[in-house]
Length: 125
Image (cartoon, rainbow, N blue to C red; front, side, top):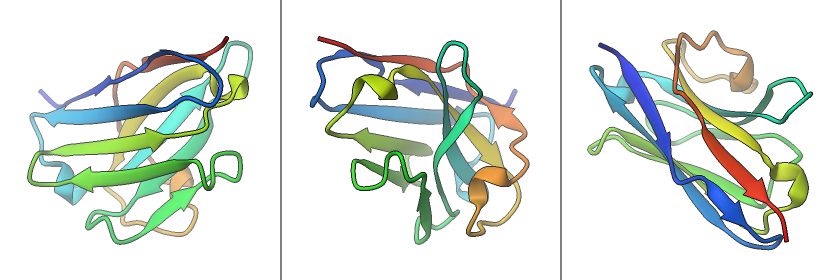
């Protein structure tokens, strides 16, 4: 069974940091472009970041550029999203997803066929 599991979410104060992880089971992540998405209550899902199969190419939404860093460890079959200087508007459920399509500049628009259950990130004082 192909499965993605996110972890690392939680409650953090504005300006704080969190590191999200996306672990795969049942398939090898190295063959997939991986994206991170988020959805806040009442809002549409937003593509946050994505990374190529090798990890050599990345994309960030303008809203997180300079604050979030995506990385992958293909040996451990995981992808991470390091988030710093978190803001209340970063509050959302964060999902990772895998696409069998190769990376492109607008990788958040690729077809993502495998999704995790999500992890809640709440930024509040």
